[in-house]
Length: 190
Ligand SMILES: [Zn+2]
Image (cartoon, rainbow, N blue to C red):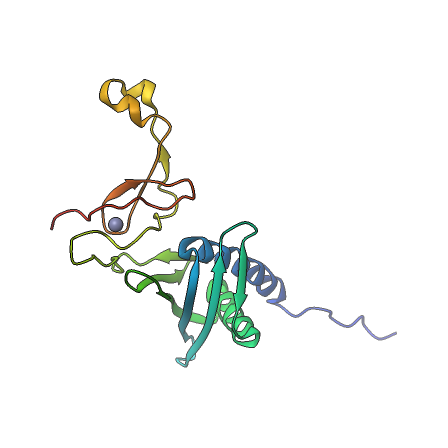
């Protein structure tokens, strides 16, 4: 009787896990980008020194229900597959993901390096500043949201009770709107 054929070859489990992880990573990206039309670009350097690139135009609406639509589904799936490989890591030496957004009052960019199985915001992608000095970013740095406890602070801080605050990549921090966007603020003076 012939041996039972192998149904999986080594690495399939890792790829499946990475494909699932790429969905989680993409939803983090979607939350970081917020409403609008965004262009995602992924550039990776494979272990065989070949460059691979993926690009997808996305439209995001966070007005519930959250909706993500890709201009071209094939491009989107190709980008997601590349992201999965970059997250899995064994065939990719290094990879970056950059999102550019056509937004008022000025276009913005958001970048991540992909390493250790996750997306890490690039510290050098500082948001822009309007001519009169306001920061153009409204997306908080993920994981920095905190709630001010007025009882603990007392005094003049009492009016801030219950407000949520978060950091901005510009180095400033600001209170959040109901929808979780940073309120208008100015970046710290250099
Ligand atoms: Zn800022």
